[in-house]
View 1 (cartoon, rainbow, N blue to C red):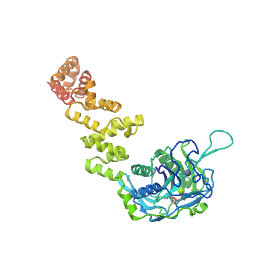
View 2: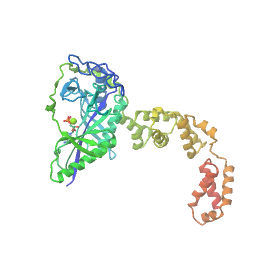
View 3: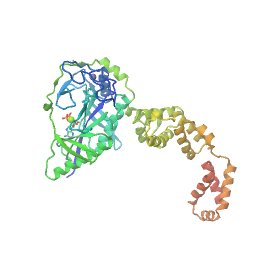
View 4: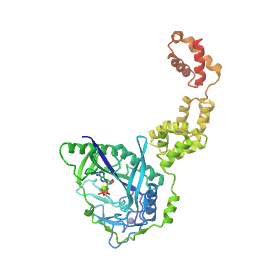
Length: 476
Ligand code: ADP
Ligand code: MG
Ligand code: ZN
């Protein structure tokens, strides 16, 4: 029997507002425990929450960027459960009337676009954090995170493979980062994902029973956790058992998912409209204004990079995954760099160097105009492509212009024919037997000669001239 997986993701994105969703406390990360709290976010009786306008705007931005309908009427609901990190005994969330619904985002699967439906996006408050370190027979509770605004972005069960789920997460992360509504940091938990996974025999219409997997905090684990879960469910079925609906926890050390609790149902939470918060009405003019302020999004940029700059899809995809990278590229092109050449240097050397240091492109000493200038030097034959690598690394490290480095290090390409000829003659005189073998038809020895002359000339010989001269001399 062949099986097919069905995957839907619930993503929580922490919004980049300065203050919490229902009070004025700071959302800054990493402060002294419980230093960013007030009566409202610690849930004292009788206090009244007031919605942070910025949080609402961010949720609408995200909805518009993901092709959702923005609700003209939405409201908050109380989701009731008991846990030490939830001082009120309920979380303020949205239930029946979320702010955004019925959207989609596009991912690329095997070279073609696939739409993944967005069921809904709703706003809610984060809970606090229980801390179990410190020894003793007790735990600590830090409420700094309580009330930090979140968006929950729920997808339709439209994904079929772990890699589609990864692509979806990557696209979503790119979108929220482009919008500036979330920093997308998965390690720190500002973007987290629960994966709903089920399997069914290929050809069957109905979905199988799903398990919900929590605690997935990287793209690699999205893939690994879902892969593991698919295999596990298939095995359960093939062994004659039944998959049960439950919540499972991904253990990244063991590389497995483990049962955590049986799945709670909506009625377990006793949802009801929050009487302390007025319903939200959003005017069409507000929606239009927010839409007008949206930046160009990754998909539009990717398509434009292909059509305007003639870049291959792969280049366009990589260069637009981060807004800052895309902007760097466009600046280099504006400064005169040939697009494909700029792309090659960025995707090769620049990304390698940035990754090595775990540095972001905003903090790069090398500026886009400087890459464009270096490309001009290559074009004019002042420096060879080979030398350019050395120069590029130096530019990256020091932020100096290519021209300056060329002068300082004496790296100008030698295009003086007599100088190259002299080196070629010397080499030929030194290696009579290789010359004979070459003349007898062992043509691959040309590479040996090129390498030796280049070495003698410290890599500075004009490669085209060197090649021509060598061919001429060796065959005469
Ligand atoms: P809950 O809050 O109970 O987890 P939601 O409806 O909010 O329920 O979320 C359900 C998520 O699970 C959605 O992302 C949806 O696409 C996905 N889903 C629903 N049914 C299945 C299924 N049979 N297999 C895989 N995913 C599913
Ligand atoms: Mg869920
Ligand atoms: Zn507060």
